[in-house]
Image: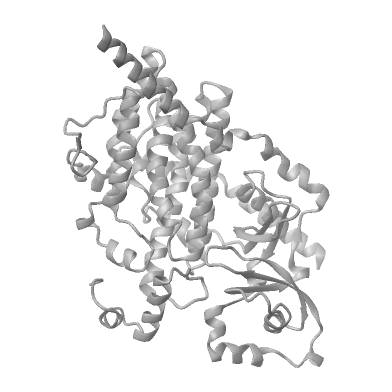
Length: 190
Length: 324
């Protein structure tokens, strides 16, 4: 009936000093619509200064479990053509560092293939060994322009009714109970 | 079966005993299982079943309240309801994403829903007959969902767990706006008080059914708990909900539709009368008050969106041609 559109991974930066983190995915026929869908699905609340969308298929991932088996290591080495044969590409490197966390931006490496990029990340970013590596070419990412951030994300800032703190239900329940207790006291003294 | 040791289970599930033992050890250490990791086929199957049902529930869950957006009594209430229904759409998307990481495609999940093959929460097959139902849904239905989702936020599968953390944060707004509405109306005019009483009377029992069958009749619970997908049983969660809600609803002056409801001082629990499970199974099998209406609305919405999908695809194809 319908054909499924490609899947785009969505990354979000919540503030200027925050890392870019992975959020989820959207389906879209192209990156431009993926960006619009990502805004609607992931930025209904104001915590965003930047969104990235990347075709899910271009992201190469390795979990710690995969890396711990010799077969995987061999796969990394075998798949990697000798440096002279390939052109060096800039890769973004992401990692998941704790069991609860999402993948976040770690740095960039230059490599000839995604497999080589993971190897390069293991060597050059060795002080941070994540539980899960993700690498993808810098050129594969669509980001919003910084001038677009205000019109894209600021509308959510004024919708304070989406914040649970707007509803003082605990205080309201306490007031209701006090009122009931006072009524009882008055009845008892009559 | 699931009280048994790993070797027996490995034989029954036709899995490698060593891999299964390692997998269970990871879960016991509190580690998250990520999409690339080894997992038993049954773990994958159970998660796809649960997450897709959960996603469908979010999507169908837009319908009972969505019908009231144009009838909201004030601009503030309208904005709140719009945002809430939009959140449910987003929650459906987060969850379809989590299921996709296990190999299910969004297309096959959506088709299963539209073909009437997929299950979703029984609660959305009841009608919303008054404005106060939106308050009852927020406080009761979303309140019940949060208890379940708070548990699932700790589940062993990484993508599901992370989707739940995000959803729980947003659901707290849903619950509190509903509770605020019920508290205010319960102290309002006689008409408002009657409207609130009527809404809670109708939503109380269906909400208790949301937690699912009693533990003894819940066939999937054993494996779900063993592998850290669920960490608490249906009955435990239901009891927590009853203990939280009964005193608050009574403080609002609302009478619950259960002559057997009483406080058991020995166990410090509120005890309800028997739940009508015949009604629960009937609704789940498609014979609830609004099942047919919900599915018809969902199919209509999908059909009405057809031209948008076609236009988007045509635009993408055209841009690609221009680039090449």
